[in-house]
Length: 448
Image 1 (cartoon, one colour):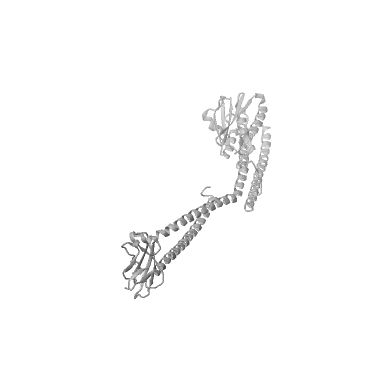
Image 2 (cartoon, rainbow, N blue to C red):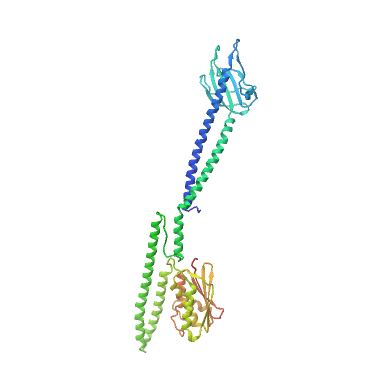
């Protein structure tokens, strides 16, 4: 799941909002439980305080005494965390204290002389943090109020709340994780129609399909419909371009043929000039019409064709054309290679290169179909005289003819190079193993 994807944004957004909601809920639940435990702690100490008050009395000499000790054993253990004391007034001296205080006393601040039960937090012996409840009582036969206080270590509150908080934290974390898994599954399932749409477009681009097929989700169906309409419109535009190019070729080449034929009946200098210029015009028309038609189809979505049938058709045709010279054409290399482009363009490229090889070969031509990464490398070799290195670049120049004795327009290699360039391919010349010229045509391969 990439960070810039819709799925990541949906899951990340849900994670933040759900995490924040669970964190706030956990905070309030923990605070509510802490308050509940604290209230229960205070009630428990209040009961102990009431029992302490109940067993306290004034003797005949006016001294304060206990009829019996409080029932909590920890009051008998020094510095156990549970303490009580009775003070003569809020600011008076300590009259009685628990053995657990030993020789210490509770410094209670913030208590007033009201008779209601009050609770405070104070420091205790050995730096303990204590929770203390106090009440000011006027005992029978007493001349002043006494402050009764019971204190307990707050660590007991932490002991009671910590397991709950840990369980709450782990539970909320598990709930968050479960919800995230559910959200992720929901997002993946919800975005699956987009995956189907992407797979359909891949099939169209690679030529395995012509349009988006199948039932799409309600939200995606309009997009699929518009894409199909766009593909149909592109197909109509390309077909119109092809028809227009064909009509233009017919409209131009027919008058040129008439002019050339008429000039051929004369042997004057003017006739020779007309014949020469019409030949040049014919070459230029062939070149630009081939380039225009290739440009109209080079980027057509889904165009693809197998290479071997095209090569085999061209081989049979050229063998018949050059039957008088007994040219043999051998085909090798991989089978099942698929060109990512239009069949007519492939025929144009390979046909021009192969025809050029047959024209210059002595007796043999070889064509090999190979792969170079994601491209097809089609190598054509002949056993002719080849070309010197300084003439190879000239041979690819548009309209260049290195030998007027060989029939043709001189545009074969140039047209092949330009059509290959429209597909981001290339055409290079080198020395063939057969001794003649080697032409390497590199064109894109269709995805399987």
